[in-house]
Length: 191
Image 1 (cartoon, rainbow, N blue to C red):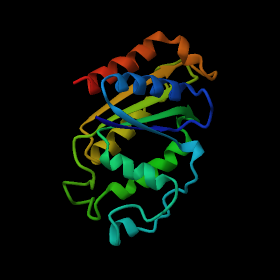
Image 2 (image 1 turned 90 degrees about the horizontal axis):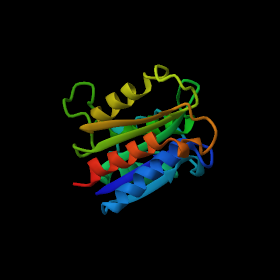
Image 3 (image 1 turned 180 degrees about the vertical axis):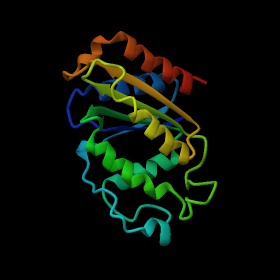
Image 4 (image 1 turned 120 degrees about the vertical axis):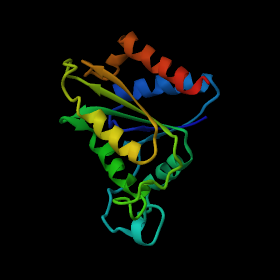
């Protein structure tokens, strides 16, 4: 099984990244191949609104470090997106990445029942870490990702969420969250 892991935190020892790494380590034990991209280490731009992906190309026209990430997702079985919750949403790095996934939509996506250029049946794992301990806060983030990625043909979307983890590495003390990441890897990759 192929897994692409996209880390959206700008911090080293980021809680969201640690959860994603735990998932990836567990997935590797089941023979999965994992490719990880740290968005903050890449040089890329947001969607330019050029519409070339709808009029001339079947992929994003912008050539930068995100090109490899977008291409890798075409071939993956499981996409793991990890982000801290910054200012009531995912990090700017991950939001910029999400805008570039517009290129996955077919030109007539408004009316076409098959909206995506991606092969159907992929799985999404969204990992969120927030300093706010209130689990009722920021519950609107996952439904947006669920909507977008189901439009892209992902048929199984999951959420791993850690609340009340603000300091770098703090999630290491959350056995419940780390166990959830491992169990999810076993369920999705263990066959």
